Amino acid sequence: MKCPRCGAEMTLDSHRKIPLMMCYECGYIEGRNMEGEPSPNSNFARLKGLNLNETAAFLSAGLLSAGMEVDAKRIVEWLMNPAK
Image (cartoon, rainbow, N blue to C red; front, side):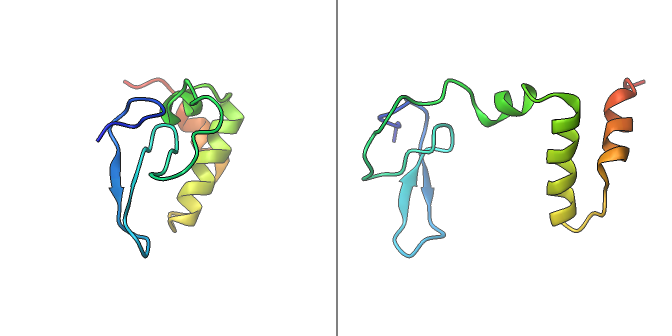
């Protein structure tokens, strides 16, 4: 099923009491109003637009919540070194 808001493919969101179709690109959920315009950026594009410190803070918060104990300083060092 295509999203009526942005045209991306919708996914069945079954972790709710009543399964609904949801678009992970713009956040539209089946049966809701289509208020406003869809975001022109995907989640990856928004992450790519962050500066170095914001990216490091975002990644470290996600990794800490996953139990990986990674701090922002190590992520900045990793991002600053080019791949060899």
